[in-house]
Length: 295
Image (cartoon, rainbow, N blue to C red):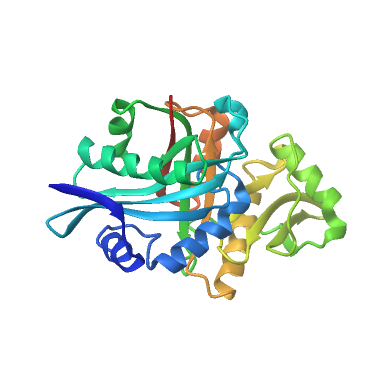
């Protein structure tokens, strides 16, 4: 007979270490990384409070685990909810992709959420075999993203534009950052200079590219940006290489970037262009994360 309930950090960590997941070493380092990328405010990385570690057991053996979280509810308008926070189930790992295991985990998570006054349920799943299971259990997909990564000790496979000079920006250079981002994707997200090292690419006296490198996580927060008239001139490669060098100097082992995709089942031209750029520069797909919600 299977039972479900809260488990210890040690039990959760030992179970996750049996999975070939490059992001997971220990629970403490994994959750510290998750807190760091919360600055992105995406559906699966938005700042979290862990409420419980859940596990399904049979005869003393763990068969499935998950983390039950309280997260800021940035998507409440999309969901038609007025709540400021919601329940979120993440890092669902099953020994086998079977509905009964997932049903037990989700029921236990909903019990935890109700005890904390949370009514909206979301699940972010990065194992593809779980996506059809979640839909069969009545959850609908609403968001999708990819996480790519680089081993910072390895050279990029592309050569940067030698005419580009990449420098660390100061708060006084916000207007240049705004011009770059608005010419790249149409709007501007200001940097957090206390957490991010801001790099700007210059071609002569013109700012043509930028990136915010998170000092704690190695994340390229909000991606690499290049003004459109300089696309395909290896400006982005120069920015990416400068970011890799900074991560290497800080002693980080990995650099990552998150791209939220516009469509659930296809890829838009803008997303395809970003995907092709990162992949051509050596980025490896670490996870495709899909968000599901209770209908």
